[in-house]
Image 1 (tube, rainbow, N blue to C red):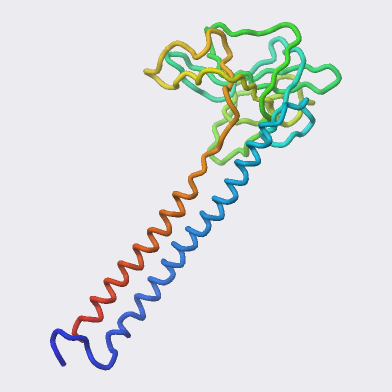
Image 2: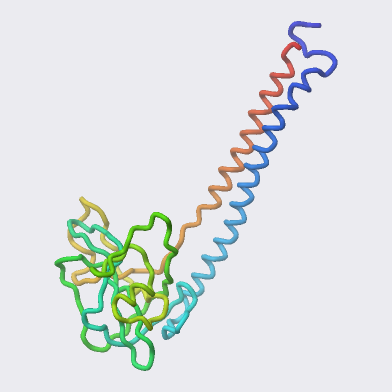
Length: 249
């Protein structure tokens, strides 16, 4: 038998059987992950189109249970003293969060309203006393995870968005199980974090959202990555198998 040519009798092919039992499942896994991301891409694209269409409609009066991120409005009076903060966010040198308030409506249950960012202390925070109309989108609660930080209802500081619990802590247990997040188109929100510009984006506070949420859609990039890894795996295995077949028995 030649010391450099392929072995006779097909013996090298048998040496590929065991590695193939490892290589084929890995290839199937990579292809499966790529296919799954393509399915996620179709789902997310349809969701974004649905959200865009939903938010382009004129606002409707806030119902008991609107569609998630629906464009809604509400008219009433903010209940004095019924406020809480959600989350932690530093803007310039000020520490604050989303200012939540109870809006009392005539002929309808009170509504939890996310008025926008405000500092915990200081700042010129407006608290209108008359009848106001606010508009934005409906935000439902989040599922509490295993490592979700604990809230402090006594201090009215919340790190987890649970509208029922927050409204209850503010004396409005009959409020619907969502919040109206105020949206006022305008300049971009001030940068967060230390070292950012100390001046807020608005002369008066709270600083509401300037647009509706737009979830990212990175699934095409993920799919390309997984399919690229699958191609690379085939190439690597093919080069290895070619070299293995050329080895002497």
